[in-house]
Image 1 (cartoon, rainbow, N blue to C red):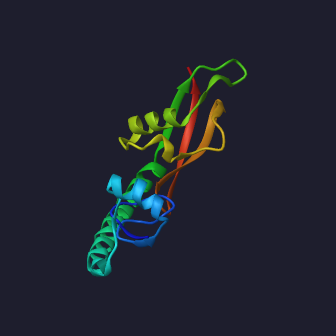
Image 2 (cartoon, rainbow, N blue to C red):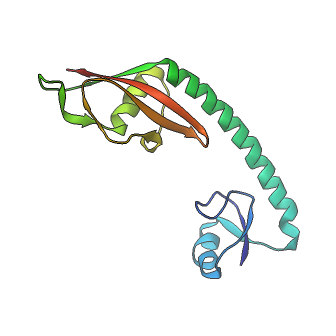
Length: 148
């Protein structure tokens, strides 16, 4: 079944795309939630308008993300945690801790899911963590873990 997507749907397409999906998926999920409309021949103009507004919004979001990246990469975020005498933390520094420290240091609020870490920080000292701000825009966060 061909549908016109009214919002971005992961694994299917983006707003304004006309895509072919299984009819059950369209009837049971996309159409009832309002994420899509049943496509017909006259919807091409509407789809082009939706894609144009999506591209404009994406360009604005990308430029805002580039600005945020410059601010984030210029700052060093300090996170205080309880540690033993050997420099090992009693707990660990998680994505949420980094987001809170980043909000305090730079006044930039990110979602904790935007933070990319291989594993939580467990030792005192400097570390680098990445943050996905927008598709294709990744910032490197310099984190300094200090003992309380």
